[in-house]
Length: 114
Length: 114
Image (tube, rainbow over all chains, first blue to last red; front, side, top):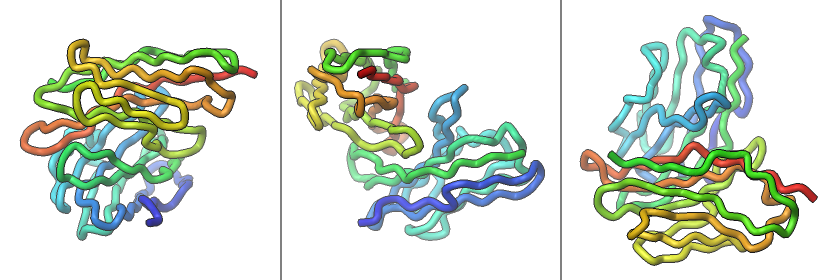
């Protein structure tokens, strides 16, 4: 298995632009997580999907952030408009939702908003 | 609620020293416990796990024992190497609001000097 695949690995954009981050979970995993990691706040859970349905989006910072999971093999995290304070590494992770199983992480997308 | 607390870093050790990184948790029910490791520029990787009380997870010389009586899951290694330098995250998975949620500690940076 190729693992969790995220794209792009690096993104540099100007303030005000729309940014879309992509994630392909491991086949057969039906839970998907989006995390943000910064030096100041560490690892923050943004949103959690189970069977393509958002279960907990309480970590989404504000209305500029949105996430979708149109099918079991694809998810996006969109920021519109982007701001410099959104600069961070964004991780996607997936796992089987049956039981207390471990999650598998992608390599992350390093976002820089200038 | 459910939470994970781990010791603040950075932890700086000389090569071949003994390592302990403390982790305690609060949880309802019967959580599973995990240690993840993050090397520079990479995503989080599962290091070891334990699914019930008194289980010992082990991998690459690292060990942690699930202690229900002290609600702890401390990470240990008898002799660290420079290559162990990384950030270590303690995590738990437990049922919350009818779904399995994954909660991470704030991470502990380990620096091993030659």
